[in-house]
Image (cartoon, rainbow, N blue to C red; front, side, top):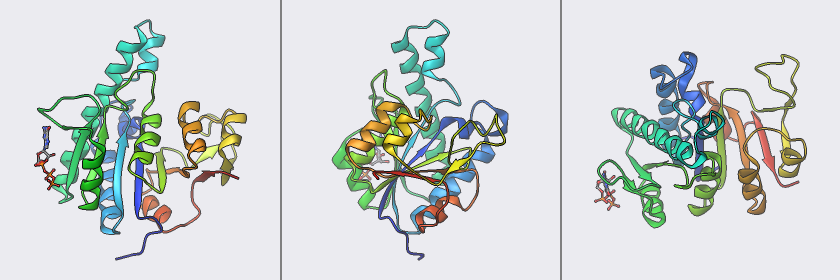
Length: 239
Ligand code: GTP
């Protein structure tokens, strides 16, 4: 078994990544790529929890911008994360990876409810725990849910898998001259207005000194590289 630098990790997968080239919904190719990497994490002995976004299906903020009441739109976004969680669980199980989905909104016919001590027990038993439905509250992003759950389960780091190579000074999808940062402090992220995560999630990381690594999850070996301590992506921590 290859030795990983971390023992317990929270992986945040953005919904947008799941959409792949199709731009909407769950791309079979992308979800398979992510599941393969998660399988690899487990094989490396890393206790793995996953928070999955829902932006590939519905974004609360976009719904609210289009005139919906924000709370309703956010609940729809939370339900979108449940669809993604069930799809990921199913695929991981076909690959022989043991998983449990825990939902922050009770829907006991299809997933366990979120119980912190149970989640930790699953991790100790080397099951991948997929946290669905965000924090269960409107006005909180799935990034904030990821930071919250990471702290609750005592994860050593948050790995934020995105579709670009890290954090850039400008949007790299729009500007080819955008420059990637290798390292940043939480305060840099807030002061420079870098859109890695919303400010609630960043300050929660900062206040609790939880390191964050932003990297491109679309590259096949990237999670393994991050776990081995290779300097890819952007590291955000206290300076
Ligand atoms: P251990 O007791 O640590 O071995 O954990 P376990 O998850 O195997 O035990 P449990 O008996 O709680 O769960 C057995 C199966 O039922 C697992 O696949 C759980 O995900 C699932 N399960 C547990 N609670 C619920 C629930 O409230 N709703 C749904 N839909 N499934 C549940």
